[in-house]
Image (cartoon, rainbow, N blue to C red; front, side):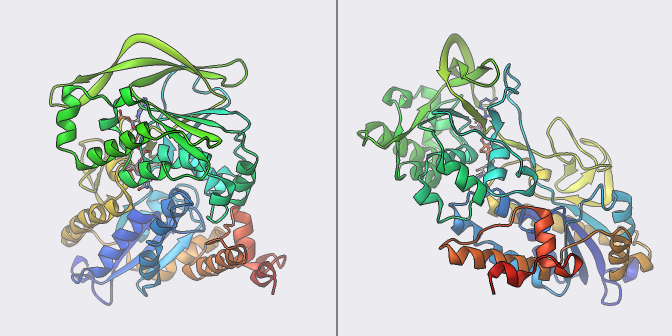
Amino acid sequence: MASTLGTGSRPLRIAIVGAGPSGLYAAGALLQQKEYHVSIDIFDRLPTPYGLVRYGVAPDHQKIKSVTKIYERTLSDARVRYFGNVALGSDISRAEMKAHYDQIIYAVGAQSDRKLEIPGEDLPGSFSATEFVAWYNGHPDFLDYEVDLSAESVVVIGVGNVAMDVTRILAKSIRELETTDIADYALEKLRHSKVKHIHILARRGPVQAKFTNPEIKELGELEIADVIVKPEDLELDAASQAELAADKTAQRNLETLQEFAHRPLSGKPRQIHFHFLRSPVELYGEDRVTGMRMEKNLLVTKEGGYISCEGIGEYEELPAGLVFRAIGYRSVPIPDVPFYDRWGLIPNEKGRVTETHKGEIVPGEYVVGWAKRGPTGVIGTNKPDAVETVYLMLEDVPDLPPVADELARADAIVKLLRSRSVEFFDFGDWQILDQLETGRGAAQGRPRVKFTAVDEMLRLVHPQRTQEESPASVLGS
Ligand code: NAP
């Protein structure tokens, strides 16, 4: 009966799909509330938790990764269980999830990327930053990714923080990278990189750049790369001046860019070149990318004050053997779960899932993070976002039809997964893997050396299933 839902004898059964920041903040908020007893199962399609903190945050930004300490506390709570290596849509269906849980939160992030939709975009040598970032962070889906770093000239399209991350990883020396938790294979590839010139392309002006100040400043502190900014690119039109006056981040960004523009070159072997007011219109080359055609832009103020850009019909060419588009992430649909393709997210009203965009609310299903609001904001932005959704979930409890008691029992889902031979990772399993990784890292003066293949992770942590390799053998004890 609905009246008993959320009590000690019949806690509210909640599934969170996705163990990244948004899912873990949602779990944290549910644990903190005092209204209902909760029992939370967190699923992730990978064995490892922490989503974008592990596979998105740049390996040289370890401080940001320390947020996992908070997530560890959530995952250690007796009311929470972790089920890694369980994919919604293949290992378990949405209907089965709904049958086992009173409420479901989708916290699936944005795994794909936006496209430029220009000729030549699919030529070899043209990549999404999403893939490159996942690759250098050791994401299991990208182990076969082939990136050829033999080109001297590279273009990074976009001026958000992802573009800054990609640029830094390409521009840093091996000495700078080998103290990070970058994937071993990526470190090896970057060791032989021939990249000398990294061209960053911004379709609008410096005031409209999306990067934040620490990220742009970092480019000026690299061991083997100079930054080149043309002073004339920093001359602002009236609309940009007005925008600047109201935006502290843009003011600090501009100061940093001005400092770069007046800094004498120090002769470092790599150079980072900024190009403002340029849009890519074509990537060209016979068998692979050899260059990019771009159009010069002019800023135009739209109704409502948004400063956009328009091409002026003047074109330039930039030779480049490698192009990364860092123009934004995009969620991917989950089988049977509503998806609004136009915006690339799960349709919702403040976190309550809807059947379609602006459609009927789907009782008992919720969404948080990038799958809810789109790929914006830093890790911490997911906290208030999750709290907003959790607040609505609690509000909905009195009207919730509870799932059948026998399926709400904690062992029901375990039985289902076992019946399908799904080899799930629990939190203890992850802690073993975590120790193995940090142990390997300590031996090399690095925060961790990641395991990157799912099979290997499973074999190491569940050695009894293969008897081939044990945690002790990896640590050399
Ligand atoms: P973003 O901040 O939205 O930046 C995307 C960039 O791509 C913008 O400069 C945008 O220009 C440009 N762009 C979009 N479409 C384009 C097109 N067709 N042609 C040329 N340029 C185009 O996205 P992001 O860099 O992927 O970052 C996603 C979120 O993660 C952001 O909130 C970011 O701050 C966050 N993040 C944070 C960190 C960190 O804290 N260190 C690191 C990585 C990511 P317009 O502005 O003109 O649209």
